[in-house]
Image (cartoon, rainbow, N blue to C red; front, side, top):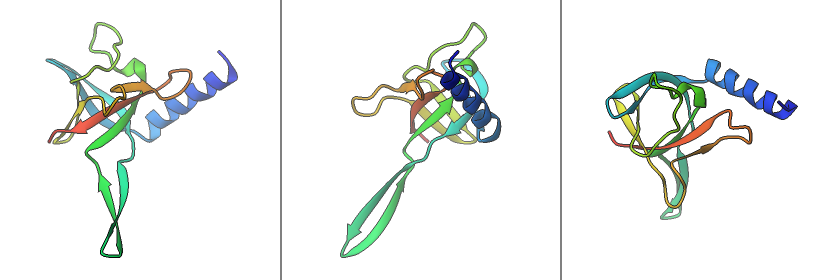
Length: 121
């Protein structure tokens, strides 16, 4: 591995160990509890009658997940549309937004996936 790949892997491990939350990742009847790093919600600024207002939109949020953690027991799988991520009582569905795919590699070495989700509950 190159020095950059080693550093990206180390950072992914640190983020997962110290900056993650426990989620339930589901595909059909298969589930796995794993650690994921929630991305920030979209923040928009609106101007209404000369007053500025900030709107936080948590409908769409990316979760950063180490690829090796998405394993339902038969081997590691890639995220797929319609998979679910549950945190407490909040359910989010893996889905694409606009013309973008529902997931992508977070870095060149693929040490993390950014999984796009939309809140369904």
